[in-house]
Length: 454
Image 1 (cartoon, one colour):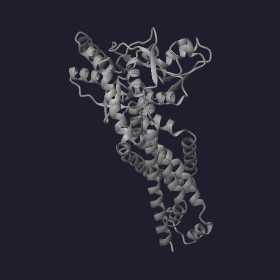
Image 2: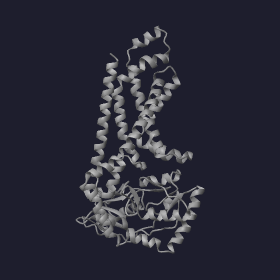
Image 3: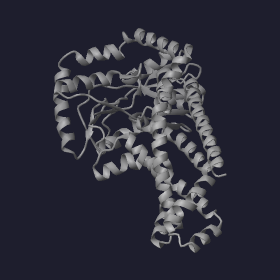
Image 4: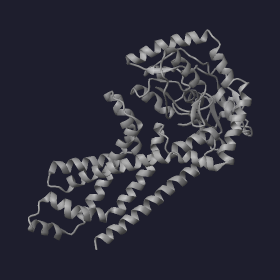
């Protein structure tokens, strides 16, 4: 399994829904030579090393350099590409010399060698601020909007950027670039095995013209016309025909609904159980339910998702798919909120009904199941629907795991066109329509329950 961040053209990016680029072709050639079947997992750049350490991916190729800091945590192959850094800036800003960086906001991708390089440069220029963001297309959007004065990038990557944005230029930075290498898991036998095997194939490839041919294809001057053609084609597809853009983004609706509905069911079952513990006669059950609720309501959803997907597998040495990890995290979080809603509904029932049930000698659990809970859930139904609405919106976080939900599909379009407004507007529309449908079904259910209770 290859881990990469497909927002780094021309090394790895999405074209017509398929991940392509220089790194992908190198990885495919190496795995073919070794007799492996290549599978690709797309995720944020900052998630690559945690995924490697947890065993979620077998190796990483995503324009990653073997820095001293990274060598403490992962193994690296010999370099397969010698990188060089450039500064991208608007022509009007004239940041053609590093001395002009003083007092400027310079953007870099979070967790990259570019970030370390920029922070070192910031020590030499008064007022220079380094802005680190997770995805490269976001940096270009910030540059175009004027919130950044420049962006440090790799030369081959900068070539595709200026082809898409006529108002941008780049200048080479002297003495930069550590070379890109393949990363493997440290402390695992498989990591050491892959390191040896990949180095053998890379040594063989360097004796041939294969890598040079790829450089010409993806990075050389011969690629400029092709990139320009692809750029025009992309702009035509995503800007002149918004219908196709909508259809592409809308493909993520299925994933978004899957996460929402399954997590809503899991959260409701868990929340109902916790609510019964909170109002039940067992002291330990009450304390456990209260503690659980305080933990999951007191920590960010993104932290919980990261712990389930990255933290626990790394510690306990097991693998979990993004789908399973997302559903677990969302269900656990939603259960905490649902438990408070149902508890409030139960405690809002008139005390006379409890007394009547006790006078009739109705068992506690039968009373809760047949008398109290149906009324409580009907009373808090609008609040439960609101929780599902919030859950639907929170599922956008799975885009950080590479899942093709609505938000991720919009990010793919933005990465290809370096423009966020149209795809994000369509994504917002998709979420809004889904929530309108959810509200319609909820009101219909409320009317049905109200009629049945007459």
